[in-house]
Amino acid sequence: MAILYVETNFPLCIAKGQDTNADRLLADSPAGSLITPSVCFMEALSVLGFEQRLEQRRYLEFAASFDRFLDDAGRDATSPDALSLKRHLEESRTAGAKRLNDIQDRLYNALERLSVIGDLIPLTPEAIRETLRNPRLEDPTDDLILASLLGHAATCPDPDRGFLSGNTRDFEDQPPVRDALRHSGIKYFRDARSAHGWLKSKQQSDH
Image (tube, rainbow, N blue to C red; front, side, top):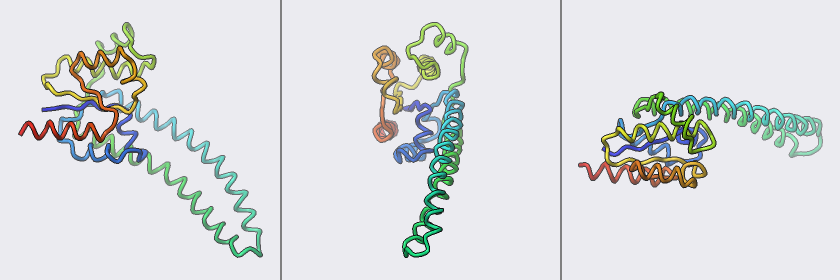
């Protein structure tokens, strides 16, 4: 059976609604075909927490400017558009707050589905030592993800292995990483659409 490695970027794309093909890939993949390093779950939750704090700060700044517009619109007793403007501003402010909750709900849902249908690569002492002694990437978490993938591939009996990551700067553009993936028999995909097509074609050829 063909397997597809996915990393932190995958559930985050689903959570942010940035790639509908990623959601389709998750929905269509049979049990055991998606493989995720366990560290990616922790990283996704950490990224969510950081971005929530960042977005909350931006939203509060944005809401403060909204309040000034609302005050001006509320004091305008002559413009026929003032009431409509005030209503739209209030709706926009509410929608902005809801979007933050939507992202969290979608991420939790994606992580739960991935944990059910996918397999996890546990964090091993070997992967930790590889990252500490022979790092291939500047970012230590990404390097740990890479070490986990390569360690799993070394013991994986499945001949067809793919790796989906939108993080091309680290996982595709670095020659040592490209070579390591190729040497391990892992085909790289930068987008969910191509990874989905590859996985489906491999599944069909198995039948």
